[in-house]
Length: 558
Image (cartoon, rainbow, N blue to C red; front, side, top):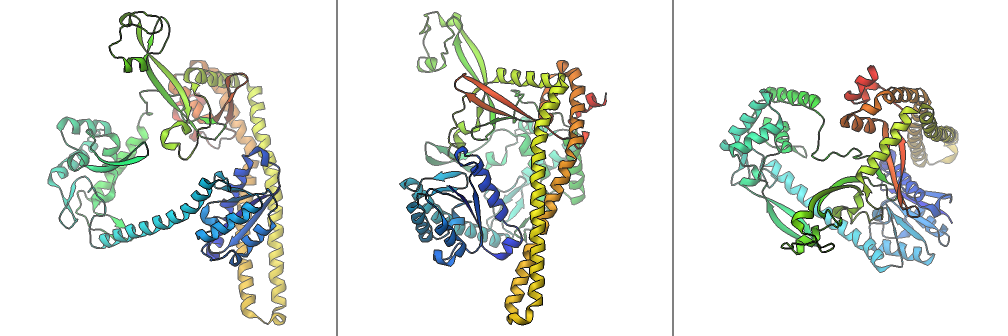
């Protein structure tokens, strides 16, 4: 069984500029590597520079040859439906040929069953939908450019401090303008964004959406319903977005068209304001959520590669029989006794909190992109304690830490050997193409077609330029790998120092340490043992101590 990766760009300029061919091939190889039954199979890569709007497969010679070379039950990968074909008729003809040989078709991140009506319908409809959306976006963009050329505001809501007149031209709103000046003055007094938001709420200043209303979409049970959102309070982000927008200096461009806007602040004063905000951002204390998640952003599902997010739920429980009664009390709000043990709820009912980490695929808004992977939720306290125990053990046992990092280093050593082999192959290809150019120039008189000769040499020069760029990137990677071992020793030295104080770390220091020296924690579930498995991936190299959070730099320096 062979694995085929088809990569296509529409023009030679795109190929020379590197728009996509290498990226398409890399994504195809990564997808095949994630499928166990396909690992080890030979990979054939087809690269084509041809427009996807050709009316027949015969006009695309590389694709035609690839389809003819496919064997029964081979696999083929397209980066997206447009790489296959833009015309639905050509796309259907390709699908018919693939179906005859029982080919497994992969598009971007999923496999399409060619004998499933729903999958083949989806492949066909996407092309028509993309054409419609492309035309719609062009129309919207053209309308915005025309409006910008006439000094009109192109959005529904005018920015804070302005209002639209009958011709949709922005004018200063005297009511909101005075509060913009007040916000700027508060920043110069050293007041932060949150306190400014609180003061505006106390003064009763309405937000822009409270005064006008903003249309938004809410997705509920498959139906879109238009409604108007009107937030009641000012937020940190709202104030920060207003104060950092250069629009208030009178600068606004839309696709090269400058829109003249009355300014509320001079350019010099705005620059000073940005310096103050940047200085506040540097000295701002670490953000603390109401609910603190020690492993936030570190846990990754082994099944689909998505991150796990922390979630804490509050529920009512009977303290005698330990039965959760939240749903029961919603259905029976006037109940007086526990349905399980019969005890009086006024005596036995307690409010408890339970924390878990769940895969992102369980979120409703991501279900249409990522089907549920089936990873059970992880108990928050247990997984945090288990990860911290493993980290503590490595920090106090340096030989074990070195062994762990040596495993990571051995992988990179293999990568270095592969890089060196690829460098030799690229150098060989460059020398062959240069020799071919020399041979063509020597036989210039015998060929008799100067235009063909010029085009061939130009194409070879482009290929040599692209290969030279690849050669430089590969050599840089080899040099980086050579510096990996001394950088690893710096990481080991840091772990050694942290091992002396790791038992006395406070919560924020634990958080900073884990996020600085642990790349990720891969989580899976063993159904036989009925428990979660954790695999730590540690930071293998460190260029500079400045990358470490300030709370940890004091420990390193001491």
